Image 1: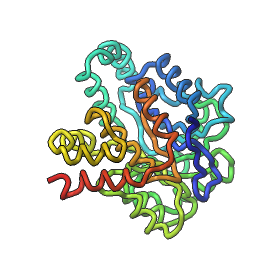
Image 2: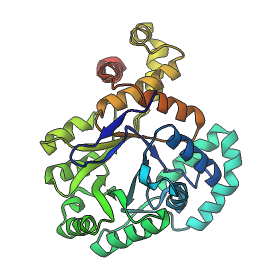
Image 3: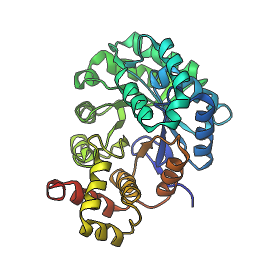
Image 4: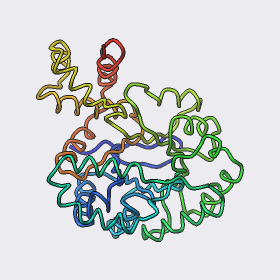
Length: 325
């Protein structure tokens, strides 16, 4: 079964509904394993790849650029500006290289890798010259003359509407170095961009299964808006809480089984949350990390299915105030 494809509203960009998030490419995931995973995902139909300068302890863009050789015309690439990697990135790259074999064997170390990667990014001040220079460096690492989407990474709401920032992004669009510009941040920054309209045609944010932020964005925009979402399993332990609910509530298990989500609680909950992400963002791209083969197979299988609105209702009921009590 082929992956479902979408055309992002207002952009003309067509891509797979499933995107590959490259945050750990080059850090927790080494070059060879990363290239293999990228190629297998692409062979499975994935055409959207999301990266940023600090990802992978500063290595992700270069590794993705290596993967893009001979494939650039068939994929969409999003990179960003606004966050920098750790000050001692060279030391951190050494730590990752030495630690990967152990992290592959021990789940506790894998969690430490992930937690550490999430805390080392540093915000950088946005200005016109810095924005343009960052994109040029990214293009060099990616070995391409343009990206499909260039995003402000974790900006403040005020930064998204600053005249100098907007003009810098408009100049980048005019230059052809990016086809679209985007805000990749929290709901507040994305809402400010949605309300402002041009030049932002793409918004990227976590689609928390409990707060359902996409509905808020659509109201703020007052028009169809192209969205790229991530955090399929939620920020606040949505997967573990859903599993706990299923393990404690036979009625919830029966309801999921009736909807086609059978099997062990962890597997059923994961399939449900992935389906919920695609149904919540049916015309956009859902990002997932797919470096592990089982995760890749699961994501590819679910991305081939039509969006299932019942998954949104199920998650809302099971994780909402009544379901969580």
